[in-house]
Length: 430
Image 1: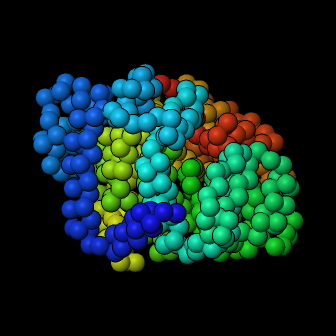
Image 2: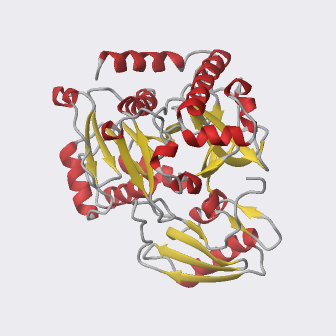
């Protein structure tokens, strides 16, 4: 880690204890810089701003962002690289990351070495805030790719191993016992499977100090299973492939600390900011992405807004709750919208349910895949599931329940608990 990066990490560690007003002033200065840079150096944003008659000096605060049109993933995918990257960026020296996500359509995110490292440091701050130490052994259960190794890791600093969630469950546990991690990080569903198996087999030798989940919704039951299986505290991180770490829990569990010194996070409905406690779509403006700026980028997540502060004393305001993906929202025939989090809370508490998937085939037709405990009576279990879902989806909906041995994973390793095939489009106004 270079002296410059160490200096930036120290600044980040100090920033979290600034007052909310001081952090907002820092955010405003960084916002004005990235807006000016995007307009002057990125063809896409230059044209976008001109199309609505906006100049950089018109954006003086985060409230002024509403004048800038929203940028979607689809729009970026359809543009040539030279239109969405800054002039003068040496692409051969950049980190180029591709993911298909749940849509199956590849998206390439381009970060300069500096952009990439700053994003990593923001994640590191959230880990350090939760008890991680630079000398800790760290295992990530998320990707089959071997990460790049840095010189400081050979000195015993920030050591990290990767375990693929697609490996045999027994192999994953064996690798964890060999690694003896102080920190385990990964997808909620992957860590839950491991924790359940560890507890079932009375496995010893895996005693992490911290388990960090992310990438999927963490419901209360999954949190309890992971905590019990690893006998460790569990903290949840809100991450985005495009923007890195967006928000994170601390040990007080009062919400998610938003990294407003590196991002502007908007929660909107009908293209207007929601009030604290209301639900809406998440828009992100990255303040440290200069190679490929993302301004008012729609990451297709739903969250419940909030501006309160945590009792821990940090000035980073709290996001109340992550609700799920807009693609996974259930829209009923009466226009009501049901978030994935609502369904998770309903079904996870039913005795005998190990895992489930809700698939909306048509506006009033659903298929429920259930993975049950061996001693759970199918008839009783399915009756309880029908009653719980009937209270949310309505009694007139057709609900077909299938008992399955396992819920399949996406190529990314995620397990999607809710899938809607009803193309309701985006929330009105976006």
